[in-house]
Length: 303
View (cartoon, rainbow, N blue to C red):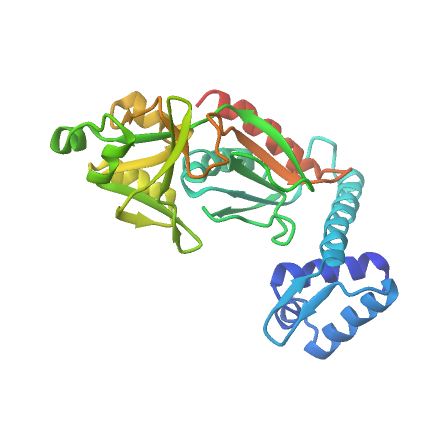
């Protein structure tokens, strides 16, 4: 087998989450898959995967190798596309990730329009409010709010953003308007969950003093769109990204609360937590990925 074949097999294993699952897709037995991975590790004299009968995990070397495999395979695919198609035709996989609310409101419709123009691109959109390892998940690009902790990823800012508190006019009429962050202790708060943990430590700044308040969840959910809909329906106060609710503010379905005090979900949140697109560090970015980023930037400016 060639090195390209080995790289393709390794990527299949990582994306499938195990040797047996990848083998079923490739028509290979578990024993054959194990032998192939063992040979790859022997060739490079390093452990790439820690594995048992049910799951696998990338080692540090494996993560670097996986990232390199994606880059090489993408370049091979691009080279083949140049030979097979005109430069105007895009084809290949396009796997994206976004937060649930932003993804449904903006990324999903933009992606559908993009695919109408480029039907040979095969898209897959992952919506999650959790933290995704885009290298391990084989994601080509992800939309994220806030600071970027992983220096191995490339960040491309899209627009300014900030965290805001919001509620519907009907909620304010029924329960009153909070005048100070401490007042939230007596209000119905709508809380986002991440990895099963409520994000109910809300951070504020008053008179240059930073502090947090642990609010009691009136309703909580791991889906940010559900939290926004609850706020729209008058069930309580939500902490959201401004971009997620900007259309609700225009229609008057939601109003801002304590806007001069809000920082966000953590001590590291700043007044500005911009929207950015991130992607693995690659010298050769797949053409369909680059084309979608450029398309989305133009599309989003009009929304």
